[in-house]
Image (cartoon, rainbow, N blue to C red; front, top):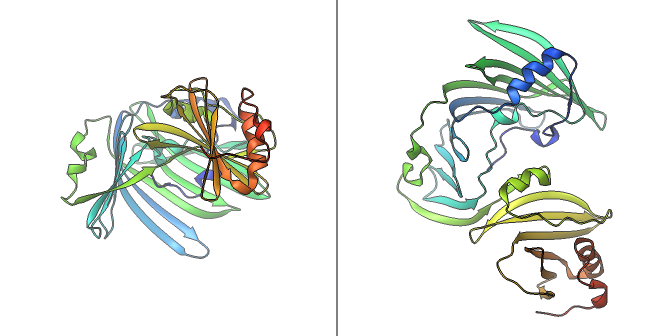
Length: 333
C-alpha cells in the first residue's frame, strides 16, 4: 500500500525521552490501541520547494485488524482496498480492477502519528481549546546530519481513546506537510461489503503479482511469518531492506543485504520439503543458492560476478554447509 505521510521513513522508530510526568501519562494513553473500527476524513497539504502546494483529501474506513478502504475525494474516483490477503486498486479511468496478493499490514496516519522520532526530544507545548474539545500539543524534535526535523501534533480524547486532530511536519523550521483529521465514526459497526471487490463497479480483473509489505526491523516482520528467520552474522554486510511478499499462498521474508557494490537477496519461508545439502544454479546474470536449515527454506541470490562474496555470505548464514569447498566455481542444478 502506498505510503501516506511525507518523510515518514525519517521518523518512525519508537525511542523517546520524556521531559515530564504529564508527557508520560498522555503518551501512554495514545499508544494503547483501542480502535476496532473507524471512519475518518484526512486532509493533507504538502509544501515543496520544487512542486509548490499539493492538496489531498481521503475518506478512510478501517476494521481491525486487517481491512481498510481508502477513497480519494477528488475528480478521479480512486479506491484502494486491503482485505486480508488481497490488495485492490480501482479508478474511473481504468478499464479493469487491479488485484494483488498482499500482506495485511495496515499503515494509516492515525496510527503512525504517535510513532516517536529516533533519539528525539519531546516538548509538551500546552493546550488549545476549540468548542468543547481540549487539544494537547506535543512536538517531537530530532537532528539528523545537521538537519532539524520536527513533528508537531495536536491530540484529543474520545471516550478514553487518544486521537490526532492535526499534525505538522517541519524541516529546518520550514513546514513541509500539514494534515488534519475529521472523525465520522469510532468503534461503530462498518458494513463489511465496503471491503469486498464487488463493492466496486463491474469491470474485468487484472491480477498483478504481489504488493510487498516493508518493515523497519525484524521484530515487526515476525508477526507475519511462522518461523524463526536466519540472519547474517557477518558484520561486513548491512541489512538495508526488510520486506514480506506473498508467493503461491505463502509468506516469504525477503532481506536485502549490501556491502560496498555487492547486493545480496536472502529469501526465507517455512520449508515444505525435506532434503539435505544445497543446490546452486545460474539464472541469467545471477546465481541462486538453495538449502534448508531448521525447517526454513533459504534462497540466496546475487550477481554471478560477486560469486566469492555470495559464498562468504552463505557461510555467515549457516555453518552446516562448507561453501568454501566450492569457492571459485559453481554448478547448475
